[in-house]
Length: 96
Image (cartoon, rainbow, N blue to C red):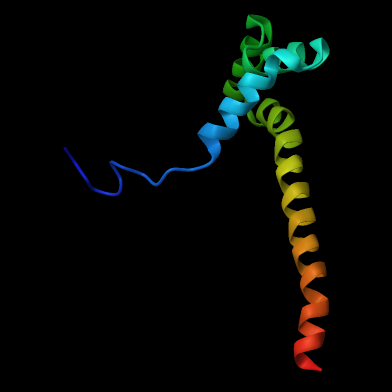
């Protein structure tokens, strides 16, 4: 048995969160269950269009990737702004 850290990663909350979400799935509204099913297992046409876009030239790839990239950038900016904003009163208390 290999007891190296890489072979035995520390337990996380993700499995329990996924299990609890799966157990509550039967209580979700039907529209939410359908939306989740489409995100997890999109139709073949959607997958084919995405693969084609990612295998295309720069313009096709840019059009497919830019909404996702914008989402990541917006999320990161909002998170950093929130953390910075929340730290300001603490900095003023310590400095003053």
